Amino acid sequence: MNTHILQHTECKSVQHSAPANTAMAHALLHQLAKIPISNTPRKVDKPLVLYGAGNLGKMARAYFEQLDMPIQLLVDASAGLYRNDPFWQGITILHPHEVSPSQRENMLLAVCIATSPFSEISASLAKQGWRDIVPFYDITEAYQDQHPLSNGWFSGVLSAQDVDHIEGVLSRWSDDISRSHHLQFIAWHSLREDWHFKDAPVTTGDRYFIHSVLSALHDHEVFVDVGAHHGEVSTTFLQVVNNRFKALWAIEPDQHNLSELRLKIKMQQHGDDAKIHILSHAVGELEGNKTFMAGLGYASQFCVFGQSKAEVKSIDQLDLTPSFIKLHLEGWELNALKGSIKTILQHRPLIAATSYHNRLGLWEFPKWLMDHLSDYDFLLRLHSWCGTGAVIYCIPRERQRTPFAAA
Image (cartoon, rainbow, N blue to C red):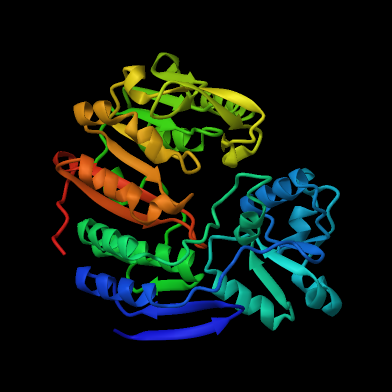
């Protein structure tokens, strides 16, 4: 194993010369579990600057406004473009070269970019003179009593039980890229290290529709988009199947998101009104009403201090016939799948489910899928960095064009 380590601002970049086969994955897991953990959530204790004006930067602005925390600056290499963006009105926007030495030395810089490794971004920023650089999601972990956004969770010490179960899951993935991405996911949430495996890249443009999914699609899919947000995934589905499908069910409980969803779907219907259905309730294991925090965009979710109630139904109660289920539920994916098991066993759909919102993604979530779905292959892919963008893909073997080789 050829490993090279670079260190900067408490984040290492660890390079591995090959994807991790089962034996290598087990050895790396045991090495990782022995490393002392010192990372903790970060409070905002000095003037706050956001780095990155894209989708994550916009989420960060909304987040800090909800907590009534002022943002001093937004820094972005495309500052000129974003100065004309109505979303950023009221915020001073600077190009990195326009930031003063004093600002770089005395302000807290929250990195709002997850499409590149944090270690590379922070190393570049440190060369510019920034002294205090932190991933945005590390800050959100310090305010869990006020806001439920929790993509930056810390695994803590991996117990003997954790290691045993993770080892079992590593053995059951269907390819070495999955094992590599699982280790990469654990390394970030345990150690805040960026692990890289040769020939196992993080791909940012194919979430939910990796090659193994695309090659299994047919022209009579029943697509169930659970946690549809504004319809981004539903409309991508319509595009990849060239509007040849049997039915599409988009499910979204947040009323703020729902209006955008309806508008986006309407623009894509192409006369398919009777085949597209939108449901405005939450999905879970059991029917009922559950406290819900709305108005958070992507991050709207069940929450004990939510301001409203969401009607909850299970997939099994809805009497759907899915051939493809996508779930993005801010950590409630496993709960929803438990309420879908009869439907899944009967109809054997493709499944693509996010697994990065909480500690269940370490092993409990994939283990449940592996224990309950027979004659499926299981893949894990990372579609962004900073421990986010992890999606578990479950592919019925009868729908595969090319079987996965045993590893």
